[in-house]
Length: 383
Ligand SMILES: Cc1ncc(COP(=O)(O)O)c(C=O)c1O
Image (cartoon, rainbow, N blue to C red; front, side, top):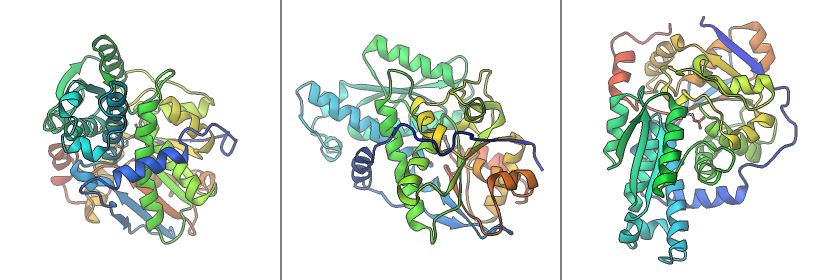
C-alpha cells in the first residue's frame, strides 16, 4: 500500500459559474472531428476484482501525439489564428481546412504562438502551429526530459529553457509574448487571460464525450489526473451534460504538486510552491487554472494526493493488461488502487461492488526511453 491523502469537496454540488458553455464545445467538436486522422481513442475494460466494472480511456493513440492534449492546444492555436487573420483584414472567417491547405500561409507565418509546457501541451501547440502555418516558440523548465523536448522540436518549434519550475515557465512565456507581440496558447488560465485555455478545455471535452458514449452504463465514479485542473474540469462539464450530477469525480494528483487537493481542502484556489518534482511530469503544476477551479470547486467530489512510488507498479499493471500508459496517465488508477482497499476512503467515496468506475488514462509512452526504463526491465507486477 502506498501513502495517500484524500480530501472531500465540502462545496460539491453547490451552484456556480459555467466556465465551458455548450456552444463553445459544439464548435470545438465539429472542428476536431473533421481533422484528418480523427478517431475516438479506445475504451478498455480492466480486470479489477471487487468492483462491478472498471474502464480505462486510453489516450495513447490520440492523433499520433501520444496524449489527450492533442485535442486542446492545437485547436486553440487555430482559434487564435482565425481571430487574428480576421483582425488583420486577411480573412474574415478562415477555416482550419483552408489554413492547412496553405491559403493564408504568408499572413499566418507572421503570427507567432507560444506556451509553456511540461511536454504534452507544447507538443499539441507545436503540431497545431505547423499544421496551420504559424511560427511557434515553446518554453520548458529544466526538468522536462530531452525525449519530450525532441518530440516538440520535431514539429518545427523553437524550444527555450527557463530556470525554475513549470509555473516559472508559464510566466516566462507570458512575459516574452508581451514583449514580442506573440500569442500565448496556454492550457492554464489566470485573471485577465481566459480565452485560449477555455478553447483548450472545450477540445478536451471530446475525450470525455467519447468515453461516456462508449460505456455500456453511466459511471458511478470517474478518476482523472490533475495538473492545473483543465482536463478534470472538462471531464466534469461533459459528465454533467451527459450523465447529470450523480457520478462522482475524483481528481488524482502527485503529492508533490497537489494544488487541486489543497485548493479543495482550503475551499479556495491555493498555490503550491517548490520545485514540484514528480515522475508524473504532466501533473507537476503548482497553480490551478482559474477557469478549471471555477468548475471544479463545485463539481469535483474529491481529490487525492498520491506518491510517486506507486507509479511504476501501476504502469506495469497496465502493461500486463496490454496497455501502454505513461507516468501521468496512471494517476487515476493509483487513486483507485489506494482508495479501494482502504475502508475509510472506500466509504468516503462511496465505492462498492456495485460501482462502475471510469479512469482517464491521459497519455501513452510520451517519453519512450523513460517508459522502457520504468516498465521494460522488470516483469509486469504491481508494487
Ligand atoms: C498526460 C497528462 N495527463 C494529465 C494532465 C493534466 O492536465 P491539466 O493540467 O489540464 O490538469 C497533463 C498535463 O500536462 C498531461 O500531460
